[in-house]
Length: 314
Image (tube, rainbow, N blue to C red; front, top):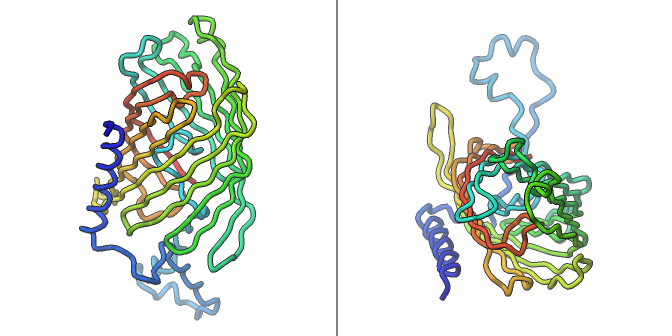
């Protein structure tokens, strides 16, 4: 057994242990999405707010908004659109050393409804993933990947799914980096259909998996199939400087036909700085990556890097 497979089994085993020890497994009819709070009565006696204690007034404040997306973001997926910035240190790499990664994008739902005992949702997903050479005098742009998709989301209880009839990604090399280095430019662009299914094993653990097929690709000889799977673990809240935070650990694993099904490993762990929110979440994460480069222009290169960053999910 390869060490990649052993690492995935170790993370999965840890998830099972956390789920067992937490004692927070859901009952038969429980759901992960709590019921929306009832609206306060519109008829409030005159002068009530002047007489109510501060605690009662606090209770009447609008509740935090529920999450808008039926399929939650994949925290360790290097190409899940969100806003964030991180420092990355490439290990034993002749071309890269200290790099900065900037992500811009989100998933924007515009239509939803009820179906088959659950909820469905249609959205637009856009993202830009840029990597910069921090060791260069002008901090050259190395690579930028652009992503656009139309995801269809579904959730019923602990199960959720997302399907992309259309997902486009194109990759571009930075001009200054290209002039300064002898790098062959690749015209990488593809359209893909893919789907993922997710299961909330308990209040602390999420497991997901799926795959995709590239049906329009350049270079045309790119092999089309890939699979993706992973696990996310959330720990209990604890105070940090009088602010509640919670630990998170996520692992994302991908295998591509183009790279002979070699496993790309992405691990992220750190603190959820807004654990009581379902939307507008901030996470401070350390990261480790080993596998074929997630940066499109270098997809044939095996890379390994560590890093740290701040991430925001709407």
